[in-house]
Image (cartoon, rainbow, N blue to C red):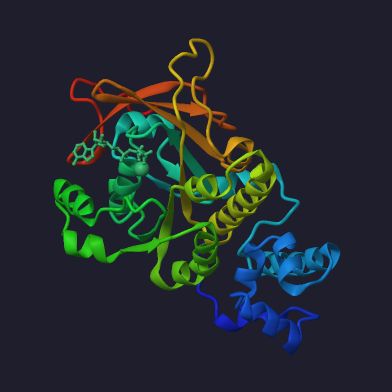
Length: 333
Ligand SMILES: Nc1ncnc2c1ncn2[C@@H]1O[C@H](COP(=O)(O)OP(=O)(O)OP(=O)(O)O)[C@@H](O)[C@H]1O
Ligand SMILES: [Mg+2]
């Protein structure tokens, strides 16, 4: 979808009603073009511009309309057959395990958020590292011949692990490392700032995968106690919607992780609840719950609009994510 378009097409002034003063305000908030504008929500624009929500919505809608006109976004009204054709064009990144690919019907999708949630050590960060390597491989091998951005909020990104996985796949690790851009976020405001800047990097560096590991940790740490819960959920909600618009506008796959504490005393129902609560649940397109089972890991697809709810087994090894040694991959389902 990254069609060759000149930068002028995206200039803020090309929208009716955006004069030098408005432009200046937008630019000082890191909104340099229409793509940036469309990826922020009306409530954020209202805050930045100090205008009411209706005016902000109007501005955001103008940006969206312009992107539709330029063929960068889908129209609001579209026939199901047209939509079907468009969905066929969604790209997928393989997971490194046939079992997981089966669970996800072929891998993680661009234009969507895939959320991995589970307790510590369940494999969330390992999955993120593996995807950063696989996305770089050609399509025939499950990748998209493109780079990745890794937004690291817990300081758990390890280049050594990338080297190990790249070598297990017989890739030149120097080259693989050079195509992963790592951004460390020190707090939730910094995390939001980085995401505001990410669009330009995606465009310039040919990025097709955006990792946010973890999406919720800073919010959880900073907003403690019941009194701050509403604000936490609101900020997280805004952040997740921003991620979703980035996935859509730039045609990238977004992967977000979320740690949950397991409660082994609960025998019935789901023993773990994601920390971000319903906010994350409602914004993520696909949600996969991970848990440990001895040396193995189990992944369950939860709440997908199109996948049946079921579980598969995978392992963590030198390839990052892999199938268990005794599993017979069931392809073509
Ligand atoms: N090089 C490796 N080879 C094999 N297994 C590994 C390797 N590196 C890490 N692991 C496995 O990955 C596990 C850690 O998984 P990971 O870091 O993905 O957890 P996580 O779900 O991100 O946890 P947290 O919530 O704490 O961030 C380790 O317990 C180990 O079993
Ligand atoms: Mg982790």
